[in-house]
Image (cartoon, rainbow, N blue to C red; front, side, top):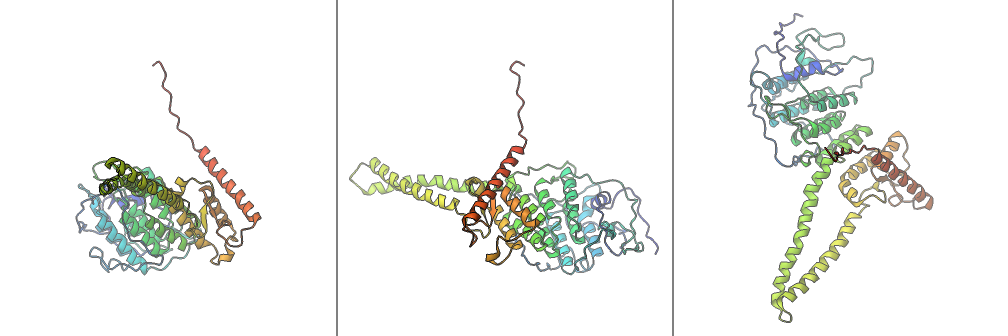
Length: 476
């Protein structure tokens, strides 16, 4: 087959292709070759960078169902013809999403354009057969060969011939993005469409918004491939944001409350890992979402501070109520009547409120298999309650469904789960929650396990290096 003439190797077709030519993985796809476009068309939509939401980044997003969601309808940007084959979709994404990022006046893709690209991948993934697990001897390659290849004949393994004499002008990536890509490669095999979606989302001009993250998890749910989800969850708070292509990207604060991942998104991502029966990835998803400092600060700003403000406003309202009630009596002076009424209201408010807070904070049996080890501070329990809920989902998914068999599981996965939960102050299948384990021997064994977990937590805290400030000399 005669090869089409290439352009001069002055610039890459787009930053996406240039990045993949340098940071390509070792996976190969059996794709049929497609011709490289000769006449480049401009983007169909304007390239105005979408505005970032000010304040808290966490937004309401549709929770992906545990089952594979239905494929989205065709969009005006990606037609049915574009989603009929993988090669056509690669060419369409390259043309409609990434051509605007190169040239003399590069533009940042809008959020809607990235979402439409993921919806097109979801539509193709709904009809894409599940790939067979590749052995170590099977050839692997770069999923971007369909974009970078010329119209050459397929090789022996069915993949098109790729000319590797490409422009050596790489896209500058942040260290966090490169590290996240290395971690994602450790969780192979990765579905081909999931690999393409991953390299779209780590593009330096793509901002990972809550809606984009939701669409990415929906695609992972359709393909049942959670291998890249922990890496993307980590990039959500650490990826540098590019507002203007002519200026260097800005490094965000990963511990800021606006960079927290919502509980619904974390639950949907965890469900993908549960469907794939991958416990290490499931625990890593919990670590990158509900165990993050950003989530604790998010919860502090959205729940604790409003509650504290409301509780502090109650005495003011009670004082106004006491002043109004004191007008309907003539036995005492007005000021004395106001004081008596206010003392009565505050006594009732403090006593009942204290009992309610104690009952709320010590509520420990609303989960099925996971509860807190005695001795864990109330503050930690409140901050990590969502982490406990996700851990309970993992224990329910991997354990026996019959209540009388709970606590009898064994294996390396359960040993890892019990140790992982114990270090975080949780215990699985305590004697108070499992019927038939109220004997003294079981309680003694559980008490020893709780002590070991608390000692492990103490060792982790002591192992963290403390930053000591250098003392200034007295006489400088």
